[in-house]
Image 1 (tube, rainbow, N blue to C red):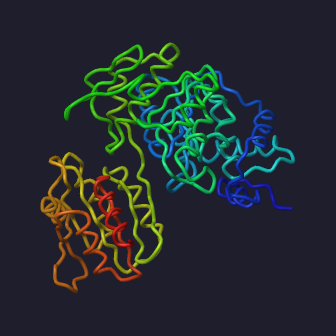
Image 2: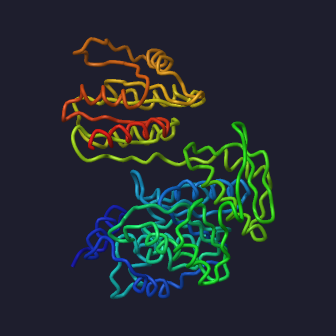
Length: 433
């Protein structure tokens, strides 16, 4: 018999081995343990599902509600470095001891019921939130929606950010099949916010069939704006002269719109002023997505475009083990703290491939090169130099150069603006087709 775990890492190791499947779709087991735990919330619960944009939307909801002075619990997955990142209370990552106490409670309540790692930890974090006396709880769906462990809680408002092809082995191979799975988080008579501008018919039909209060982008809420600011228009309220969200990305206005629609639907229970919304959008942060692509040399994609995200990336790079050389492909917007990003990462990088980006507000590669030299990075640019700085017109050219120079045991870290990462991803697609 295995000894009872006492530390978070011991618990996590045990949970990884406890259930025969990593993913076991279905709610019957989870619901039994939920009932044994007496798990229920007195405060509003917002559940957020979708293929892309879930993390951003959750982060915006949390940020705005915190600016409103509310006590907020946020559950997201997966984590980047530490498991604790999955649970935040009042904007702070929870400690090991808090999680261990909840793991013990779930273990005591589950009896003979077998739970996956995700199911067990989801129930534990929900119980932590239930006991914390919160004003609002935000739950990010792990996979799909209908059969995801998060869905054992009836959300007061459910958001589906986007529907695209992903996790086909569990959710189906078409947007229609996947849309039906995502729609499973909707509840009769309760707001169902759809941020996808072109949602699958299956998602809309399911919402209508169960009698959910369906909010569709363009029909029930929308946005307008120019380069400086944007406006939200909902069913019964407008929010004008908003700054762009602190999360920069192609779909962040869609995500922000869905978040504001969810908050409009809850306005009687969680009222928010204009300034609280503005501040929440401006201050929102989301840790970088550390993605290591298969193959050699190792390629890491991370939208780390501020010093905080760069610090996370730095820690992750440090944890990866030894690589003879690290090549960085880096491009960023001029309004970013580029010197701060460099300070976090300069000790991990041997060869800098700096790139221009196709936006007027992007920093020029040549200007970033000067900042590197100001930070004490003084390479020589001969072909066999141990360190180098080179400038390129676009991410694809920077990536091609790094690929041509990197040995198979080296690594290439792509970071900065989402445009940097997107450009390299496009280059890789053409490389393999």
